[in-house]
Length: 296
Ligand SMILES: O=C(O)CCC(=O)C(=O)O
Image (cartoon, rainbow, N blue to C red; front, side, top):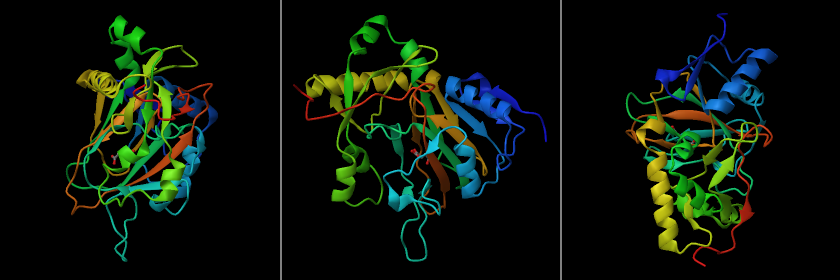
């Protein structure tokens, strides 16, 4: 096997690791090098992988505890695997979630009070065009904010509501009472501090935020809009052109992502794992329950 090489993709923040076959067990030094690159840079790509669900879960578990997410209806054969797909089974039922439409900028699990922030997406079947995925680095975005904005947002928290996000999905019925009960509105600070380096980063999710605690609705919306526009400027964004067998891992603690739509008549299937990352090494947003405090 070729030696491990890790390099920035086109000089940006996302990195690619080459020379690994992720279905094989990796030694501690290799895993440590991957974990460090991932924590520092947020997006790590591996091309030309061929992974069963068991192998995907085993590789994921080297970085954090795989989490079973609230969408049991999107599960693969293993409960820790979520299928992101527009495909249907023979009975006409969707085999996964998120359809073929555009997905706006979001960060996974922001609607949970204690989000599991690690994520891996593995490409199994893809359309000939469309469906590109983009990641925005909220650490770089924070560093480029004017000092006055940094000071203004430091004490603020945003309110997140899964009902807002769910309403943007293709093919979704109104939210079930069971899902609503699992996803009450929650709050997270707008600014997080990396526990290892002390670097600050934004925490945002335009698809899910419904306001800022203590600000009037229009003022909260305006500030969130201004921050999202800043954070998704091209210099903070990596655009991924998928190939079959790609595995991309990212850290939702300091990244947003979004997806372009694709032709719904084409098949697309990704397998995803979600990881609970250790707050001693990763930015994991703090939380409080949100009890209707927006607008006071
Ligand atoms: O389908 C994609 O490329 C992105 C999926 C996504 O946004 C997610 O899993 O949260």
